[in-house]
Length: 45
Image (tube, rainbow, N blue to C red; front, side, top):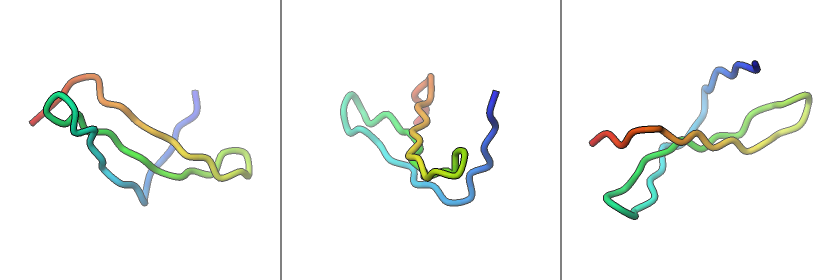
């Protein structure tokens, strides 16, 4: 398992079905910058 510590990220929302939130960030993965999206299992207001 690979672990990341995010220091710069954006919290975004879909706007659909009441706005599910997710995190978007850029990480260094094996020397390459990659976009990562983290989707939460449950919707929290």
